[in-house]
Every structure is written in C-alpha cells, then in structure tokens.
Image (cartoon, rainbow, N blue to C red; front, side, top):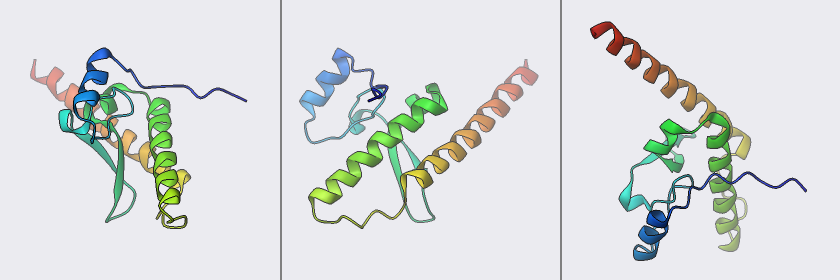
Length: 123
C-alpha cells in the first residue's frame, strides 16, 4: 500500500497553539488553530464551501499539496458525519471538491501574477 504524503508542518509552535486551544480545528498544512490564522475557503456551490488550509499556506503550497490537504479534510468530514449517523449527507463528492480546489488555485494564481506584473510596471 502506498504511503500518503504528509503535508502538515507540525512545528513546536503549532503544537503549543493547539494545546492551549483544544476546541479548535486547524490548518492541515501549518497546524495552527483557526483562531490564529485566516482560513482559505473553497466554494463548492453558491451556498457552501470548505476549508483545509489557511490563506498563507494556500499561497505557498503547490496544487498537488493543496489537493492532499483538502482530501484529508474531506475524508475527516465524511467520517465525522458517518459517526454521527449522517452517512448520505455530504452535498458534493471528493472529485467535485478537488475540481473546485483546482479552479480556485488557477484563479488565485492568475490574480497573484497580475499583481506582480503591476508592481513591476510601477517600478
């Protein structure tokens, strides 16, 4: 069986923050609880979305790594819903989520590239 790549950069600081904030979930990339970083939401429909990384990690990670983070979060959400008795309640598939992640990655990458070009023009 192929071992899954682990993205979480579990620094001492991130572990400490989670220890002192036990009720908070956290970014799957840097490990910081959501009350210490801003999440990056990926819309899956007009009325819903999901987040697995903070905005800073979103900007740093490759598309492949982001897909790993969002896959881990999706699987955790499915398991939590299954444990609570809501087996068929997920409103989108993993494949749909990963398509949304890719579209958002392309969109935000293009915006970042435009901003860099404008900064160069101003110099």
